[in-house]
Image (cartoon, rainbow over all chains, first blue to last red; front, side, top):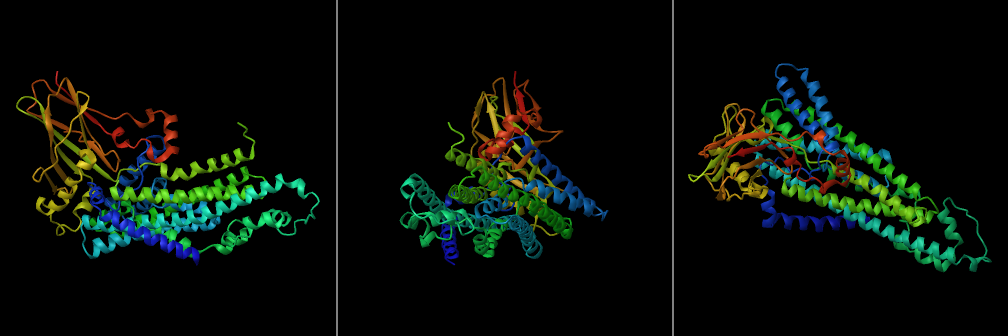
Length: 357
Length: 222
């Protein structure tokens, strides 16, 4: 509950800040990038190699999608090509910046979620993103016959909400994980101090480990005075114990839902273009089919990235193998870095969206 | 340095995990909008390069997007109806360097701000949208032995390509001037070590990707 309220507070501050930024003339200037579509894509460019190949694939797939929409006029079977190319587009597209993939992966790394849940989160955020694009174009263009300018404004608003949400979640994670990192550091120093002073306690009665984890054993063996500050501090008591059961109990679908909402509420330009194009051709349903396929493709890549993030963290944990206080410190360190990354991604997306890059 | 020390192993562990988090951010923005470019380079009476006029024809997806909601089905969107969107697009051009790099004698020419009447947008009978803009050099410049014109979006959201048949025209050019197109080097030709490096370092590297993919017009005035 305490965490949720701090999340809400962070979100409120951010929305106020974002609104002030959006209202400033400098940002209004930046927002008018020529020939913009939607809320703008994230990220800058990197050249060639895998990246160049990704770009080339997406360009060709876009042309194939357009060709299939045309073909649909005479050949209903073209819908399968459209769905296939849409799916492939999603797979390649998700390897690019923005679109919440990086956020989901970092969130996974920062929050130590089970793999299955990460994949569910990836799937949900991709599906939401597709749905938002369909809803935006469906409502704006189909019902209100909105223009490009109006759709850009709507998409821009959604992007702003999304970026602000991502930054808020990142800050919340950073605060939580930063506190946990400090706690882990304290434990680590207490442990070292205890080791250094060990001979003094050579005659002290030794209590064997009765609990499950070594941390419990180490805690039991320490003189009360040394352990008190680090472990019995009620403010961070539950945070530094790397006990899977605690993490399970602490899992909040509300936190996860906030992440999905923030990562998925920004419609992507590619989906908007395909939908408006299909609409102009009188084939809006085919456009929806293509966008649904795209979402599945995005979910596949995002899920893979999220798994990689979790796997990388596990490898890092193993490399840091030693006594439990060191593992805990490494885990909290990785989580804190990942939390900072979520903030960085949010900021990058915010600036990319405002400049419409 | 002792790589076996606990502190070092911990640092290694943290550092080894960090680049993975950057991978998702590494790939570039990719084109969503395709433009076919026809440019006209205008010379002043005393033989200096004075203006660049562009006609940019958009792909059918962006054309559908731009015309959405502006005209009754079956009607073409006229310059009048397009005026607000044209103004918006023209207004943002300065911010992106007009997507135009004109290099004369090693120096990049500067363009004066675009005024109303210098640009328009319309839907052609084949439903593709055209954006027309006249760019005037702040100071008309003598062409020298050769100069180059590049039309590109550095962010590579827009893929500009010169028209195959009619890429560039010269108006009132001094006798002997001629234009030719230089295509970009294929991607495979680039150094692969540098590429994988940029893949992992992410956002900052190669931000001018659009320039690398762009064709160049070379005008020689011997």
